[in-house]
Each structure stands twice: as structure tokens, then as C-alpha cells.
Length: 131
Image (tube, rainbow, N blue to C red; front, side, top):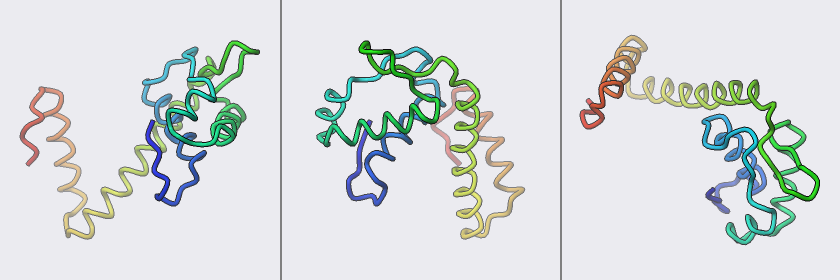
């Protein structure tokens, strides 16, 4: 997890967004334990109350669950959120791609063709050729 204090997004929201991304991408699996509050706060060099706030937000969203005194875990009921979160992440990236293509004067058909070519190249393990 990486925190950017100067990026304008509150630190607790950066934690929330990163945990949601990790859950949506499968990097954090249902039932997996997150670092204790103090450990994460020390690792990120932030106030423990910031981690408490982030974990509370994630718990209210159904992403995390506290199990008494044993710790904080990724919720086992996180599957619908994971799909929604993946689609939200991809939507943001597609929006950015479309805007950049418009600025560069590249039409949507050319962008779609490029996406198909890159998908085929990545599927075949040909990641070097990015043109």
C-alpha cells in the first residue's frame, strides 16, 4: 500500500480505495487478514486513527469484517462488490483512454482495434511490441 500525502485525496480514502482495488483484483481474497491497525499505521507512517477510519469505512461498505479480537478480515460476502469495483475501476480507465484518444485525434474505431491487438498480443505473451 502506498500513500501520497500531497495528492489531495484524504489518506483514509487512499487506504479505502487501495483495499477495494486489491479485493476487486483478487490480490486480497475473502477471509484474508489485513494488518492490525497499529502495524499498518507504523508501516505507512500515519496516525492510527486514520487507519481506524479507513477500516470502519470498509466495514460499513461490507468489504471488511472484524472478528472480535482476532483481527480484521476481507469479508466472505465481498463478491458482488468485487465485480462492481472492478467495473468501476475499468470505467475510470476507459474514460481516461477515451479522453486521451480524443485529445490525440484518434477515433473510437482505431482505439477499439488497438485494444483488440493489445489483447491478442498479451494473450500470446507478446508484451514487448506496444505499437
